[in-house]
Image (cartoon, one colour):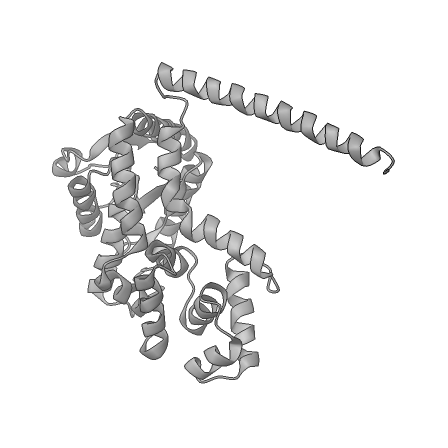
Length: 327
């Protein structure tokens, strides 16, 4: 399942700040379940990002819903956006959990959507935390019980989608990131050549909120390994400014400003490339596998232990040889 899309009203709501705090609480519950939440207001918020055009918002949010393993939709306030996102989830076979206060009226057409697999009603936040956590666990278990062959096929398709995003989405992401001209062309080419996972670009812009020259400097320097002088010419700046841009981007990504190439490479794999594979790992190697699979796992564990013991003996023999006097 891996990523969970948090859906909730953002436009023309009475107390936007309070609503965003509530959505972040939902995201916290998702994180406690071992999954990764995606909050639309961190990328396409109508208040924080008012210059993002409506078509870009649609393309980005549609893509995120389509590639999520679960949507959690707050249904306590009427919202056209939430209804559209639930319908996109239905279209793409993504399960939806509705969340609403116990005394709120929820539209019957929303409750009747085939995508809705659970409805969590709550009276206080402690009850919400418990009930939503249980609902997420049930959905995760259901996903883990799917047939492995179908899971593999879905994963292979999603991996291809993770590498190559539709041009419309790439264009929308670059608009959100305020990147155009030659830098935008370089990033498009990197996605097209597979040097930058399309899903990785989505995470850099959406989840990590990199913008403008910081995004371009990080991609060109730390992903495409271009020299600072080359990047400086592309951005019309001096190399020292580009160096500061790279360092600033790394800090936003929770990396050290002076991180070396090995650390950057590990981060790229774990954060920008590996995430699309986690759903496959969770489904194929979950505890809910059938007994034959469990037996296979036991045999594999036994073989690994036997190999480890053999390696221990080999290393011990080498140690003895090294300790013996040379002729």
